[in-house]
Image (cartoon, rainbow, N blue to C red; front, side, top):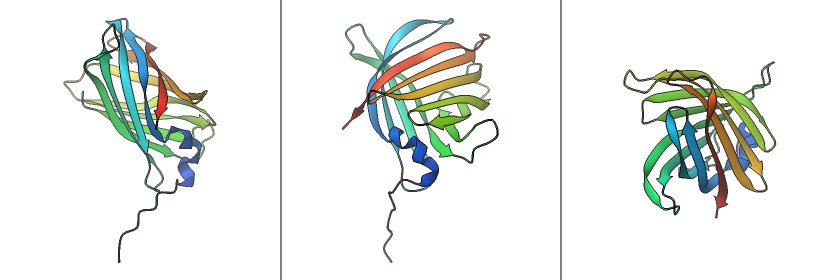
Length: 169
């Protein structure tokens, strides 16, 4: 019997349907412990019919002319729709980073907006100190806008990164 892949979007992740696709653009990353720089980013969000979305993000440093200089951060993970809790949580984002950090976010997805906070952070003994994150994603005028606040290196939750990405056809 031949294998058939069901690629219709599972109802558990229907509120996240607008994320599906490939996105590319640029943003700014900075923190009290580092100088602000411009970066480029490509995100690919896919599904195979099961109750999750697969996520991959790659970023690279941009020079003053907007040309790629070197790779920066990479993250891979999964978005999951979950039954809504009394506090409004209805989505989870699980992320792994090659820098030795694994994050579990929980939050609320609504049409065109997702807000998440870390529910757990694990670090390798060799990873930089990082304790919490807060992310917001929005679908604004057909673009993906996102921001992240981070608590790390002894700093409280502070603005860290923002970007605007366009859907790639």
